[in-house]
Image (spheres, rainbow, N blue to C red):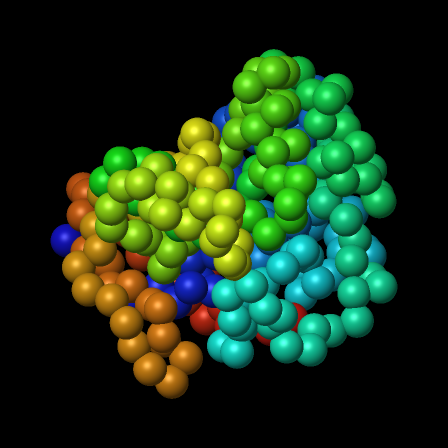
Length: 257
Protein backbone atom coordinates (compact mmCIF):
# COMPACT_ATOMS: atom_id res chain seq x y z
CA UNK A 1 0.00 0.00 0.00
CA UNK A 2 1.12 3.55 -0.68
CA UNK A 3 -0.36 6.91 0.26
CA UNK A 4 -0.93 10.02 -1.83
CA UNK A 5 -2.81 13.30 -1.83
CA UNK A 6 -5.16 14.53 -4.55
CA UNK A 7 -6.41 18.11 -4.82
CA UNK A 8 -9.84 18.68 -6.36
CA UNK A 9 -8.22 19.84 -9.62
CA UNK A 10 -5.99 16.77 -9.78
CA UNK A 11 -9.05 14.66 -9.07
CA UNK A 12 -10.94 16.25 -11.96
CA UNK A 13 -8.09 15.45 -14.33
CA UNK A 14 -7.89 11.89 -13.04
CA UNK A 15 -11.63 11.36 -13.47
CA UNK A 16 -11.40 12.76 -16.99
CA UNK A 17 -8.68 10.27 -17.91
CA UNK A 18 -10.89 7.42 -16.72
CA UNK A 19 -13.93 8.71 -18.61
CA UNK A 20 -11.87 8.98 -21.80
CA UNK A 21 -10.82 5.34 -21.39
CA UNK A 22 -14.29 4.07 -20.45
CA UNK A 23 -15.39 1.30 -22.80
CA UNK A 24 -18.92 2.67 -23.25
CA UNK A 25 -17.58 6.16 -24.02
CA UNK A 26 -15.05 4.82 -26.53
CA UNK A 27 -17.74 2.80 -28.27
CA UNK A 28 -20.21 5.69 -28.45
CA UNK A 29 -17.48 8.04 -29.64
CA UNK A 30 -16.76 5.71 -32.54
CA UNK A 31 -20.25 4.82 -33.71
CA UNK A 32 -22.81 6.88 -31.79
CA UNK A 33 -23.32 10.06 -29.80
CA UNK A 34 -21.53 11.31 -26.68
CA UNK A 35 -22.92 14.35 -24.87
CA UNK A 36 -20.66 16.12 -22.37
CA UNK A 37 -22.91 18.45 -20.39
CA UNK A 38 -21.14 21.66 -19.36
CA UNK A 39 -19.61 21.62 -15.88
CA UNK A 40 -16.18 22.12 -14.37
CA UNK A 41 -15.26 18.44 -14.04
CA UNK A 42 -16.68 17.76 -17.49
CA UNK A 43 -14.44 20.50 -18.88
CA UNK A 44 -11.49 18.23 -18.17
CA UNK A 45 -13.40 15.33 -19.72
CA UNK A 46 -14.01 17.36 -22.88
CA UNK A 47 -10.31 18.19 -23.12
CA UNK A 48 -9.32 14.54 -22.75
CA UNK A 49 -11.62 13.61 -25.64
CA UNK A 50 -11.12 16.63 -27.91
CA UNK A 51 -7.32 16.81 -27.81
CA UNK A 52 -6.53 13.30 -29.13
CA UNK A 53 -9.02 13.90 -31.95
CA UNK A 54 -7.35 17.18 -32.89
CA UNK A 55 -10.58 19.09 -32.27
CA UNK A 56 -9.71 21.18 -29.20
CA UNK A 57 -9.51 24.49 -31.09
CA UNK A 58 -12.25 26.81 -29.90
CA UNK A 59 -12.86 24.97 -26.65
CA UNK A 60 -12.40 27.02 -23.47
CA UNK A 61 -12.39 24.81 -20.37
CA UNK A 62 -12.50 27.79 -18.01
CA UNK A 63 -15.87 28.79 -19.51
CA UNK A 64 -17.40 25.32 -19.71
CA UNK A 65 -20.12 25.69 -17.10
CA UNK A 66 -23.60 27.11 -16.69
CA UNK A 67 -23.21 27.90 -13.00
CA UNK A 68 -20.44 27.54 -10.46
CA UNK A 69 -20.05 27.86 -6.71
CA UNK A 70 -17.54 30.51 -5.70
CA UNK A 71 -16.37 31.53 -2.21
CA UNK A 72 -18.93 34.35 -2.08
CA UNK A 73 -21.83 32.31 -3.48
CA UNK A 74 -25.11 32.71 -1.60
CA UNK A 75 -28.03 30.27 -1.62
CA UNK A 76 -30.56 31.70 -4.03
CA UNK A 77 -28.23 34.59 -4.88
CA UNK A 78 -25.56 35.32 -7.45
CA UNK A 79 -21.99 34.08 -7.44
CA UNK A 80 -20.36 37.45 -7.94
CA UNK A 81 -18.97 38.76 -11.24
CA UNK A 82 -18.24 36.02 -13.76
CA UNK A 83 -15.97 36.14 -16.81
CA UNK A 84 -17.25 37.04 -20.27
CA UNK A 85 -19.52 34.15 -21.28
CA UNK A 86 -19.73 35.07 -24.95
CA UNK A 87 -17.25 32.27 -25.71
CA UNK A 88 -19.29 29.61 -23.86
CA UNK A 89 -19.05 26.70 -26.32
CA UNK A 90 -22.32 25.03 -25.36
CA UNK A 91 -22.23 21.40 -24.35
CA UNK A 92 -19.74 19.24 -26.23
CA UNK A 93 -21.68 16.84 -28.45
CA UNK A 94 -19.83 14.23 -30.49
CA UNK A 95 -21.49 12.35 -33.34
CA UNK A 96 -19.31 9.51 -34.60
CA UNK A 97 -16.24 11.26 -33.25
CA UNK A 98 -16.93 14.71 -34.67
CA UNK A 99 -17.67 17.66 -32.39
CA UNK A 100 -21.01 19.22 -33.30
CA UNK A 101 -20.07 22.76 -32.34
CA UNK A 102 -22.80 24.88 -30.82
CA UNK A 103 -25.07 21.94 -29.97
CA UNK A 104 -26.41 21.33 -26.47
CA UNK A 105 -28.14 18.42 -24.80
CA UNK A 106 -31.45 20.19 -25.41
CA UNK A 107 -30.88 19.96 -29.16
CA UNK A 108 -30.33 16.22 -29.29
CA UNK A 109 -31.78 14.64 -26.11
CA UNK A 110 -34.86 13.30 -27.89
CA UNK A 111 -32.68 11.63 -30.55
CA UNK A 112 -30.39 9.71 -28.20
CA UNK A 113 -30.54 5.93 -28.41
CA UNK A 114 -29.25 2.84 -26.62
CA UNK A 115 -25.46 2.89 -26.82
CA UNK A 116 -25.23 6.67 -26.71
CA UNK A 117 -23.64 8.23 -23.62
CA UNK A 118 -24.45 11.30 -21.55
CA UNK A 119 -21.83 12.66 -19.17
CA UNK A 120 -23.31 14.91 -16.49
CA UNK A 121 -21.61 16.21 -13.35
CA UNK A 122 -23.12 16.23 -9.87
CA UNK A 123 -23.04 18.37 -6.72
CA UNK A 124 -23.31 15.64 -4.09
CA UNK A 125 -22.26 12.01 -3.91
CA UNK A 126 -23.02 9.39 -1.29
CA UNK A 127 -20.04 7.06 -1.68
CA UNK A 128 -21.50 4.28 0.44
CA UNK A 129 -24.82 4.13 -1.40
CA UNK A 130 -23.27 4.90 -4.81
CA UNK A 131 -25.77 7.69 -5.43
CA UNK A 132 -25.40 11.25 -6.63
CA UNK A 133 -27.55 14.36 -6.63
CA UNK A 134 -27.62 17.59 -8.63
CA UNK A 135 -28.47 21.11 -7.51
CA UNK A 136 -31.19 22.55 -9.75
CA UNK A 137 -31.61 26.28 -10.23
CA UNK A 138 -33.64 26.29 -13.46
CA UNK A 139 -37.41 26.21 -12.71
CA UNK A 140 -37.80 23.90 -15.72
CA UNK A 141 -35.28 21.42 -14.36
CA UNK A 142 -32.27 22.36 -16.47
CA UNK A 143 -29.90 19.95 -18.18
CA UNK A 144 -30.40 17.13 -15.68
CA UNK A 145 -34.06 16.66 -16.67
CA UNK A 146 -33.08 16.52 -20.34
CA UNK A 147 -30.42 13.94 -19.46
CA UNK A 148 -32.82 11.85 -17.38
CA UNK A 149 -35.42 11.90 -20.13
CA UNK A 150 -32.91 10.57 -22.64
CA UNK A 151 -31.63 7.96 -20.19
CA UNK A 152 -35.04 6.72 -19.05
CA UNK A 153 -36.86 7.15 -22.36
CA UNK A 154 -34.14 6.54 -24.94
CA UNK A 155 -32.02 4.17 -22.82
CA UNK A 156 -28.92 6.30 -23.30
CA UNK A 157 -26.23 5.58 -20.73
CA UNK A 158 -25.90 8.24 -18.02
CA UNK A 159 -22.44 8.52 -16.43
CA UNK A 160 -21.90 10.94 -13.54
CA UNK A 161 -18.26 12.08 -13.17
CA UNK A 162 -18.08 13.55 -9.66
CA UNK A 163 -15.18 14.27 -7.32
CA UNK A 164 -15.08 12.89 -3.80
CA UNK A 165 -14.77 16.45 -2.48
CA UNK A 166 -18.57 16.47 -2.99
CA UNK A 167 -19.14 13.51 -0.70
CA UNK A 168 -22.06 13.73 1.71
CA UNK A 169 -23.36 11.43 4.42
CA UNK A 170 -27.07 10.76 4.70
CA UNK A 171 -30.16 9.96 2.69
CA UNK A 172 -30.21 12.08 -0.49
CA UNK A 173 -33.93 11.47 -0.99
CA UNK A 174 -34.69 12.76 2.50
CA UNK A 175 -32.47 15.78 1.93
CA UNK A 176 -34.27 16.51 -1.35
CA UNK A 177 -37.60 16.51 0.48
CA UNK A 178 -36.23 19.10 2.93
CA UNK A 179 -34.77 21.31 0.20
CA UNK A 180 -37.58 21.18 -2.35
CA UNK A 181 -40.83 22.31 -0.63
CA UNK A 182 -42.92 24.99 -2.41
CA UNK A 183 -42.03 27.61 0.19
CA UNK A 184 -38.31 26.86 0.06
CA UNK A 185 -35.64 29.18 -1.26
CA UNK A 186 -32.40 28.46 -3.08
CA UNK A 187 -31.54 25.61 -5.43
CA UNK A 188 -33.48 22.37 -5.41
CA UNK A 189 -31.80 18.99 -5.00
CA UNK A 190 -32.46 16.11 -7.38
CA UNK A 191 -31.09 12.61 -6.62
CA UNK A 192 -30.03 11.05 -9.91
CA UNK A 193 -29.77 7.41 -11.00
CA UNK A 194 -26.64 6.84 -13.05
CA UNK A 195 -23.15 5.36 -13.09
CA UNK A 196 -20.95 7.13 -10.53
CA UNK A 197 -17.32 7.74 -11.51
CA UNK A 198 -15.08 9.26 -8.79
CA UNK A 199 -11.33 9.41 -8.34
CA UNK A 200 -11.53 6.12 -6.45
CA UNK A 201 -13.28 4.49 -9.38
CA UNK A 202 -10.82 6.05 -11.80
CA UNK A 203 -7.82 4.56 -10.01
CA UNK A 204 -9.50 1.16 -9.92
CA UNK A 205 -10.51 1.29 -13.57
CA UNK A 206 -7.15 2.46 -14.88
CA UNK A 207 -4.78 0.45 -12.67
CA UNK A 208 -6.68 -2.31 -10.87
CA UNK A 209 -5.76 -0.87 -7.47
CA UNK A 210 -8.18 -0.26 -4.62
CA UNK A 211 -8.17 3.38 -3.46
CA UNK A 212 -9.66 4.44 -0.12
CA UNK A 213 -10.03 7.83 1.55
CA UNK A 214 -7.89 7.89 4.68
CA UNK A 215 -8.04 11.60 5.53
CA UNK A 216 -8.96 14.91 4.00
CA UNK A 217 -8.38 18.63 3.90
CA UNK A 218 -5.43 20.94 3.61
CA UNK A 219 -4.44 24.59 3.19
CA UNK A 220 -2.57 26.84 0.76
CA UNK A 221 -4.28 25.30 -2.26
CA UNK A 222 -4.95 21.86 -0.78
CA UNK A 223 -8.39 22.81 0.55
CA UNK A 224 -10.79 20.02 -0.34
CA UNK A 225 -7.96 17.57 -0.97
CA UNK A 226 -8.15 13.91 0.00
CA UNK A 227 -5.45 11.63 1.41
CA UNK A 228 -5.70 8.24 -0.26
CA UNK A 229 -4.49 4.78 0.65
CA UNK A 230 -3.91 2.84 -2.58
CA UNK A 231 -3.29 -0.90 -2.61
CA UNK A 232 -2.73 -3.60 -5.20
CA UNK A 233 -0.02 -5.94 -6.40
CA UNK A 234 3.40 -4.55 -7.29
CA UNK A 235 2.54 -3.94 -10.93
CA UNK A 236 -0.79 -2.32 -10.13
CA UNK A 237 0.74 -0.03 -7.54
CA UNK A 238 3.50 1.00 -9.92
CA UNK A 239 0.88 1.83 -12.53
CA UNK A 240 -1.15 3.80 -9.96
CA UNK A 241 1.92 5.77 -8.87
CA UNK A 242 2.62 6.77 -12.47
CA UNK A 243 -1.00 7.74 -13.03
CA UNK A 244 -1.20 9.87 -9.89
CA UNK A 245 2.16 11.51 -10.57
CA UNK A 246 0.83 12.54 -13.99
CA UNK A 247 -2.05 14.56 -12.48
CA UNK A 248 -0.83 15.85 -9.08
CA UNK A 249 0.54 19.11 -10.52
CA UNK A 250 -2.81 20.08 -12.09
CA UNK A 251 -3.35 23.78 -11.26
CA UNK A 252 -6.55 24.90 -9.53
CA UNK A 253 -9.54 25.62 -11.75
CA UNK A 254 -9.84 29.32 -12.54
CA UNK A 255 -12.80 30.66 -14.53
CA UNK A 256 -11.00 33.95 -15.17
CA UNK A 257 -8.01 32.59 -17.11
